[in-house]
Image (cartoon, rainbow, N blue to C red; front, side):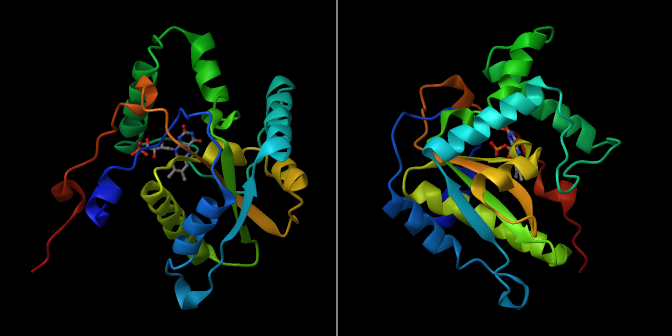
Length: 221
Ligand SMILES: Cc1cc2nc3c(=O)[nH]c(=O)nc-3n(C[C@H](O)[C@H](O)[C@H](O)COP(=O)(O)O)c2cc1C
């Protein structure tokens, strides 16, 4: 697989086979990703691999929080409070593409909620990675983390694995830190579901669109 194929062929995978991922493969993925760049080589990423009972405890706690209407208290604002164009439109299109793939109609609020809750079940993936950064680090470390995350997703592809980054799994960071035994000195950035994709499922068969190069690039000669 060349780099172009690795990047263009990655999608957010939201249905997985019931097949475990070995520790050896997970280690290989992280062993590749650790070569990602970071400002002054600070390597600010901290990763926790959650599976089995620990991961189930996180799902249960998420669902409880949701049921009790516990207000999410993420460590940071991923999205703006007020949406503006063109981002608002792109976000809307992204949601519609997902609902269409899941065959969920505009008015079907119950199924839309279920689709959202699938995040807390990690879309049935056998493994979840959680990414943390020491709170004492600056903004720059956050984009180091973005590069690291992309490296993990691309390296995973080489082993036939699919993945889905999930900001939704950082809605309740205190709960995740507690279940994973992580100190509150670390901000929870996001989770990443990982596993062998179930390519029979329609939810894994659609592709989100992208803007053309000229829409975001200015050439100054
Ligand atoms: C940091 C990050 C957080 C995301 N959080 C979620 C999430 O919580 N749930 C979800 O279903 N998708 C999530 N996504 C996936 C995006 O919706 C997806 O990347 C985007 O629609 C483009 O589609 P693609 O990944 O299939 O190319 C997230 C993506 C990123 C990069």
